[in-house]
Image (cartoon, rainbow, N blue to C red):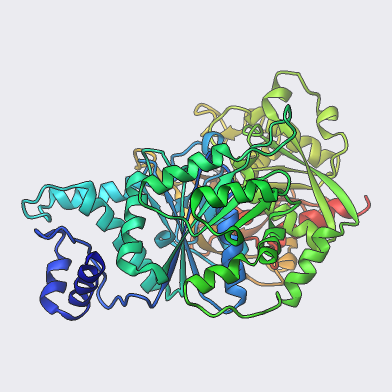
Length: 579
Ligand code: GLN
């Protein structure tokens, strides 16, 4: 009966003009309120919903991206979307120490680091249509409510919030022309934050039909050291929470350190009504890029395509991908790179930097080992520069904000410059390299960035003119992809394949103060990249140094396994080259 009603509803939505008009409004009396974008055809696109149980941080994004990659290899067009339950409108104001790196898309959206995983694994450029937070949904709804768009109706979680979510997903499906939309729900089943989202997905399944949707739960298998045995109870209870919400998973991915045992998989299977063949082990491997082939080995991609009534094609990965995997598995050497930062306690704060290093190292058949250097330790004298640089082939000063740890970074940059140690400075690292050069080469003793000190006599880094009027902190930095003019004959020009125009992604408020450009250049520093229409300096290099490069942008955001970012490649090659 319910099925019939839904079908009727859909037919009306698709064919009836009046119904469409009604749906275009934000509400109506009908409880089936679910705004369907114009021209949407049910069944044309399929959906895979990925949720998590037991705990967060299981790598749902990596799993979802890997599954997507397998389907992409078979010729399906994939569009991923991540949902974050936070009330933040985007991820720009989230502290990377708590939440991991803030990733930036070409269109300027500041989002969760999982979008970086999707871009890298699927080799796609994503947009704001691929990320949705609770805050964004609610701000849309509240804006509409203030405009009177709900026509006197009480605005409710069901149908309005869930309706807004379903609309967002269907719009993505249509716009991206995806065959399969992969929806990852951040957090864990049972969190208050994502409950309305899970409800929206349950409704999606009901409205779209079972053959068009598939639920996968990524769960965690405990293996306490004191027992030396895998335990499935937490996973069982977590999955049960999902079922209590009316969602029957079609597959379970068991995240675990060692391969999940048959016993554990059978227990989960019987407890959750999921056929054993769809309960798979996703255990730890050396690199996330090995996960697609692990999943392929379980046959899960085939089973899911079958469930979605899509053809499974027996295909091989591309020659390039296979070569990449081969090199990951057989590294010839290891290089150690120092990352000088203040969030070094949480590796996730630098996720894209690490991945970009890995891409470049793999291309050179090398493995990267990271030495984390906490700048405040250097400032407080807990660590000498000599100790910090011990065993290191090169250093990176990544992006950063505020003044804590800045002086320690300046000291490290000086050491790298004076000792001919490869240096890559990213955004804040570009700015601190200029501060260091101004102080120690130009002899401007108290040179600084006005982000750090307002009363310096030499503000070599200053706030961008367009930033001066801005108040508040949300989504208002100089953000996203921009074109950069590269100067011919420079190292950057060589590395970017002699291109004079490139595009990279930015996230900053400060820049090299144009008044000092001449002095820097006179002293031998080369600005090899600048904004096309403004005197905003974007790449710096020291020609006399083995490798000393800074970028006002974040080259790590555009690095992909099969096309590593050229500056990272240059840096890694310099680290590998004999002195
Ligand atoms: N805090 C600096 C700025 O706003 C650098 C930002 C960054 O490293 N992303 O310009």
